[in-house]
Image (cartoon, rainbow, N blue to C red; front, side, top):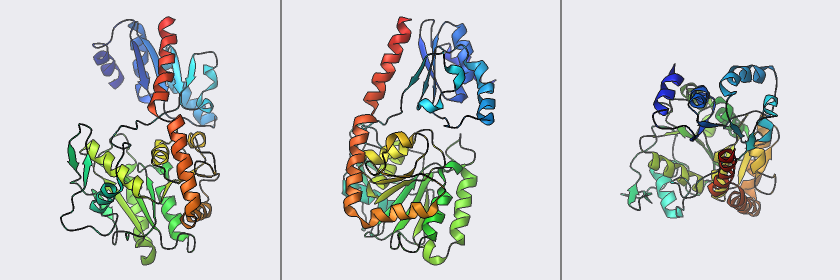
Length: 360
């Protein structure tokens, strides 16, 4: 019913011969109505799985009737393409980041440090310090907001190494697993602090599990021994101002010593790309599109088993002890992001696809 209402609204804006790209399963129901109106349709799936089994077959069986009239399909990985599309027009186009967006444009170290202090995730806030940044329109912005929810005994000391994972509060991001890995280690990560940061769980309407996952992380944090709890920090960032939120994420990524993405599954993993663009050494699970972004030991470190908590602690701890390796991986990551994962590459690929469809 929602799809039908959205299709009627969309058809007031498009005409026969236009080309529309629909994103992800939520939009699949729009495709038949657009086709009947003479509109060319591309369906872009941002999610996927390397495994094809009875569960994925059932999912595709549900979606397929809505997608039969689609003119072309786009996936992030070849492994995500189902067999029933073998004879159809399929393109593999990896996602990208915009280097000029608020999350990815340059932010100097002093500004990033002031913003992170404002958020309560670094100690040493100076009296009346203002957390300033440059807004997209060129004006000067000020980070006024603090985390909506912050669980921390005290901010991490300015000199302490900071391991950071920024993700939605989603079970597949394994925030609780990162916390447990960090808390269980008694050698490799000694002296470091961990920040697990995600969006305000009341501000992401399409993530119904967020509140439950965050609550579970808070409950786990409270059960930790005081020494571990003092070095682990949970924060939900405000979503009221999208640009301010993006700058807060950027500041955290730039101030982190190591960035983690210990996901149990990933469609692609743009938080990894963002970290790479900022020359941060990354420890990530070798799942989904992360495999396409990072060559182990060149652009970051990959965990072959995302459930191996000891391996995560060992890899992260190794980066904390080896500044040369961390710098080398950060430089390799930046070059890789520059060459492969900026939006000009993606736009060129999309343009080539659209030209083929327009000529058909």
